[in-house]
Length: 173
Image 1 (cartoon, one colour):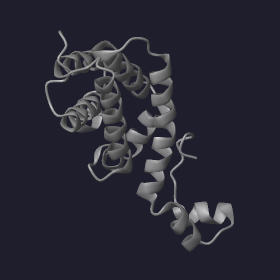
Image 2 (tube, rainbow, N blue to C red):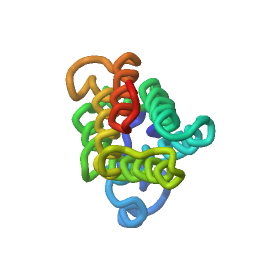
Image 3 (cartoon, helix red, strand yellow):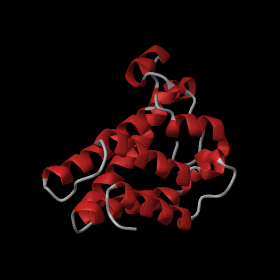
């Protein structure tokens, strides 16, 4: 339903699945959690694909993974449609510190950084948790600039974000 651009209503979903509303709420929590799980179910395989396909290590590897993921997200039509249907709700689900997607994205990014530090290929000049959080927020500012700042997201801004991430990681611009 979400991929087709249809709005998700838990009552209708319960009816369609022929289950009670209470059962559906036990299974998925609330609508925000369900949408967060849907988005994570799309994001995590993309992240796994980026990790597997990207060659290299250290700063170059992290920046290339970051670019691959965020470029794909930037051009993912179902997400663009979701954002344009209800910008305030989309912003809440995509970027709120309490959102499932944001928390998991920061944690996954931190995991990537830790793996490179453990290999000895990355020595960032700041705390990994903060660095990961800033990297995710930087991506969000580019990906969702239409609802944050009123301008359409552009590939050029994403490239600038990649340069900023390279600098944050201790690499050269």
